[in-house]
Length: 173
Image (cartoon, rainbow, N blue to C red; front, side, top):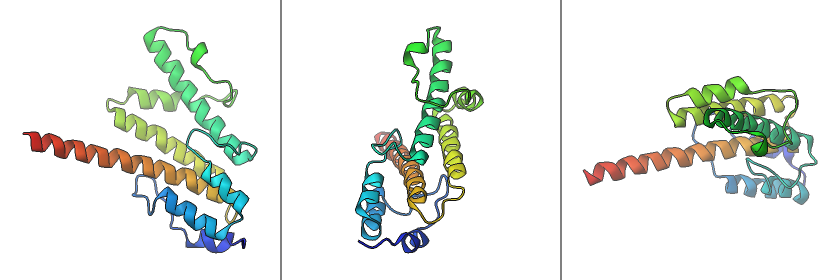
């Protein structure tokens, strides 16, 4: 299989937060399978927003650590609100010494849970943007692109579910 990272990445549309995904994650994987080595395509196939089998890649470890740290901050806030000890719910594999308290607090204090989720995903998106520095035509670029595409697909599902619920409610009246 040829290694066509330059061609593949140049052909991908730019992704913008809160925009519709240009194609499905499955179509993205299909394009990648046609252009990159099989072992690299397998790395992309095993990505999820929460984890990956290929944790040996620094970019994946950084993403997972960031996500765990952000979730740990949410756990601390929620545990404090419920007056319980958060330590049994915290995951140890996040960044140590870093705090995303202000982000978690802004998301939790938002009167709309949906807008709170948007704050968290926007922060995730910004972190992915910071990881992309220096990666233009390599597997790490595709990993970051895959994570961003997953975020966009998640919001597409949320938005379409919301519309169908509103339509269903309107039809009942």
